Length: 392
Image 1: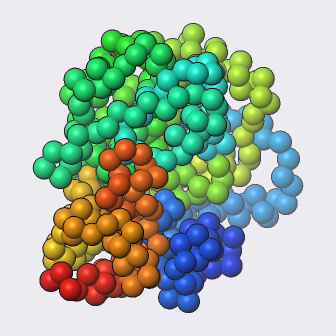
Image 2 (image 1 turned 135 degrees about the horizontal axis):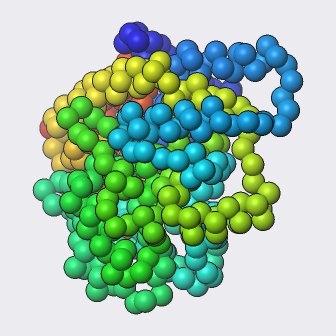
Image 3 (image 1 turned 90 degrees about the vertical axis):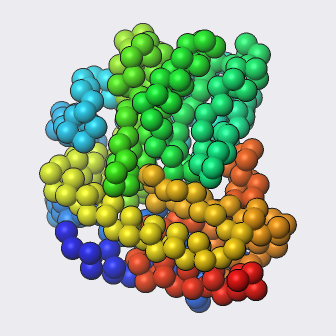
């Protein structure tokens, strides 16, 4: 895999692309020269093996019900063992319509209306949306900000618990902060869940997008938690195939697995064939080589972005250990949220995610998607530098 593959600028306007086609209606950033850096998908084509799988389906020309998913399950097992050191059984795997759907199914299966569901905020905004829509209470346990990175504050969180909480949804690696939680931190999460009798749903959709020098530990490898653990993974973030709406809920515990299976059956949920074919192709040696090249490229984009922001007084980009999402704190500028956001959207003509949508602790932040050709990242950096030039 060569770098120019990722350098290709692929126009996405007019393709029903949420990230680019909705930029102007939602953010007021003009499509003529605006830069979409909000929705967490990439502006890269997936590896050739995935493209070939779709082409093979199109050439066959019949799109019926999918049967015999043994190759698909085996591919997931191969990936988890070879990329993450995690041995799984084929019958642990449930395929959902993406991991937001997976989160909703977990909330529906393992909690009751009125229950509290714990989130470590700021965190991926769809969690709170799903929890609230299901008639459950979002319990925000705010992450501690220590020397520019997030840490876990279990003493404060223990004091918050009321006994109404029945589930914790963990984002690992963390979105939007880019943290790769250490084994010790994950052990702390496991102990917290045991102390408060919480089902632990670990969303690990970013587990393949880990920067060089960092190591992701699957929560399933933490001892003593399997009887309350639900794992969630997907090919969609790793290979930029989010439009397939495919995700995996992987449940080692037979009792939890039986409850989840019954709910899936009751709701009539089954996967789409395109997602299964693409995932099977992606979880392969060719897909693995592509991911390795991708992470190197993303790390280069990260370095360019961080270097540019380091020259702007008052801006601080949180050290990015995983994901392709830069979490930038503007509090040092002394500006109101309205002012620094206007400078980014109106002056720099960049559409980022707004920090408050991620919950408590996000008020002074914006999130920037760096999974785009390097030339676009460089243009964004130049615009941000100009938009805040009076601070320099």
